[in-house]
Length: 148
Image (cartoon, rainbow, N blue to C red; front, side, top):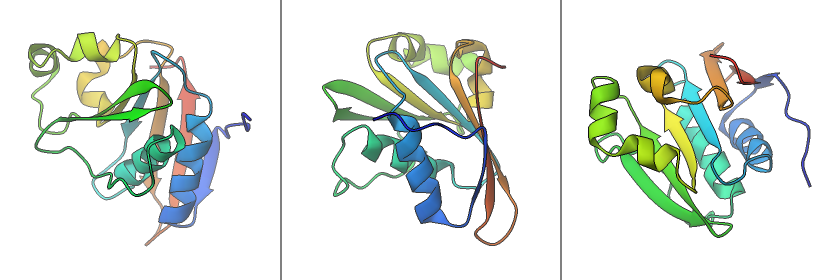
């Protein structure tokens, strides 16, 4: 069942952010890209966790940011799910050297934290999730599609 995705949402904590990620997951299909942006500690990994669990990966699977490995791969709904953290990349050349284009334009679903670092590689129809810190636990989450 596809629930409507709000374009702007105020999260009151991590559980809320995970729930919104799960909602967006129901709208993803083979080849989908979700680019996450926001400052350190804003909840990008928390949102990605909701997406990944919402895509059928067991909630027992620990989902952490692949800060040092750059890319983590999971299997969900019969599709590969790529969780990419672009924070340590020095731009598109680093991403390209990792084979990033083949990954995000392949048959899986790509979730990219710090998507703005590799913006030139992200298709125009990708979901873009911008997270702003509004308080200790409160976050403003804006979701758009097709806008750079």
